[in-house]
Image 1: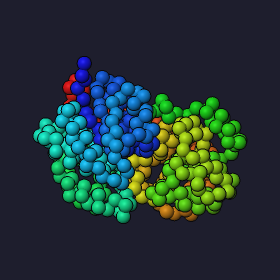
Image 2: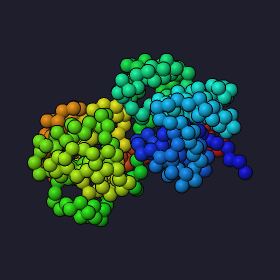
Image 3: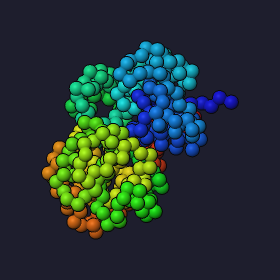
Image 4: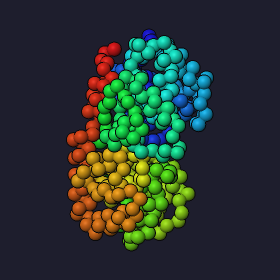
Amino acid sequence: MNQKTSILHVITGLNTGGAERVLTSLALEKMRVGEHPLVVSLVDGGSQFDKLQTAGCRVIGLGMRRGQPSFKALMRLVRLIRCEKPPVIQSWMYHADLAALLAVCLSGRRSCTKLFWGIRCSDMDGGRYRYLRGVCSWLSKFPDGIIANSHSGLKFHTEVLGYRPKRTAVIPNFFDTERYRFRASARGRIRKELGLNEDDFVIAAVARVDAMKDYPNFLSALEKVDGVTALAIGKGTETLPVTQGLIALGERDDIPDLLAAIDVLVSASAFGEGFSNVIGEAMACQRAVIATNVGDAHRLVGSAGIVVPPSSPFLLAQAIASLQRDIKLVRSMGHSGRKRIISEYQMEKAVAAFQAVHGYSNKN
């Protein structure tokens, strides 16, 4: 028996990234409550593509190559919309926003399918996305609404880029507090694996190597603080320059265990963040946080850590040193952070918020 598609998600790609993981969690939760989401990726493959497929979620790749627009891929999306007749399309990030708008208009179903764009960043690299953002800004009045994951991202797009949406909503990211929780056994195991003692002060940056994530800021701060071990976790970190105290681990899939092994999570981003997943995940694991004031970091961190200006390695080093001297404060921040995540950023709240904005019943 054919199952009616409740919502069609369109995303640029499904590698390991913040938006990709949020979409995956949302789609799997929709399946759990009896809905039938369809996830379409412009680019084939990726870790989240495999995760969705393994879980039984319908996921389709359109075969587009990164950086190479494809009319063939666009027409595949048009045919999918005509065939599936989704009541709602939710797109994620610039390329997918543009593709979804063009496809739903070409499908002839614009009057009966609602389209919502998704803003997942704040002040992204202007040179890299300049023309694409300009086109999206010009077309932003045509979707039924725009959902941002941060107040800073929505403000940047409307006040700086000139987006003129019909309707807006801010739905922060959500966190799986069962998966992301402190486990003493994981802390001991990972520290033993890395040759660390229980009383070593360990910080970590969990991010791919990218200008936006500003590893030079992180490494410069590390050089200014004695007696600190720093883990660098993420794609490309194995290529970082050798630095005293740095252990580069590359991309890993055991992030909750690695977070349990550290004392403080450091997010040193220079720009572009909307609502950082890794900050929330660290807080859920009862880890104190030091973050640069990018995106909605200040809203998320609250009393669970310290927020410093971006691109300021001296102030970042000061924050690291201050927590190194006060382990009681580190533990207190960790407990405060987990309470905050459980109270404010649970999946159920986000799912209900998406449902309210999309305006359809899960009985459809």
